[in-house]
Image (cartoon, rainbow, N blue to C red):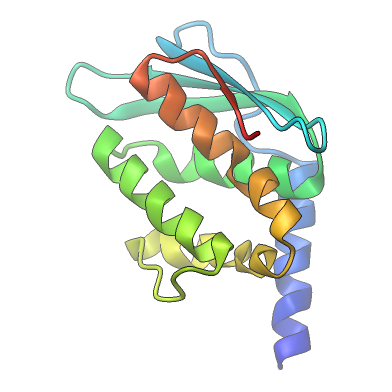
Amino acid sequence: MFDDLRELYQEVILDHSKHPRNFRHPEDANHEAHGYNPLCGDTVNVYLKMGHNGLIEDAAFEGKGCAISLASASMMTEIIKGKTEGEAKFIFDGFQKLVKGEDDDFDAGDDTERLMVLAGVKEFPMRVKCATLAWHAMTSAMDGSDEISTE
C-alpha cells in the first residue's frame, strides 16, 4: 500500500514537471518576482494578477529546474488562483512546515491532499528549497520585492 501511494505521488510530480500548468508569462500580471536557488541553479519567475478585491485572479510561472521545483510551481499556481493574499500565505506557511518535517498536521482544506504529494521532500533536506522556491517567489511578488534567493 505504501509503495503504491509513493508511486502515485511520483507519477503526479512527474506529470506536473513534464506538463506544467500555468507555464506562461501573462501580459496583465501586476506582481512578479524572480526566485533563484544557488545550490542547484533552479530559477523561476512567478507572475500574479491581483484583483482590487484582494483575490489572486491569475497565477503563472516560467523557469527551469528539477522535477520537484517545476511540479511545486505548477501545483502552486493551480492552488492559489481565487485565493486571497492571506489565504495563499497561510497555505505556504503550512506547506513549508510540512516539507521541512516540522508539522505533519498540515491542513489547507481541499488543497491538502494535492500538496501531500510533495511531503516526501522532508526526507531530502536539500530538496526543501526546490519545493519552496516558487512559493517564496510568490510571497516576494505579493510583498513588492522582485527577487528572492533561497541561499
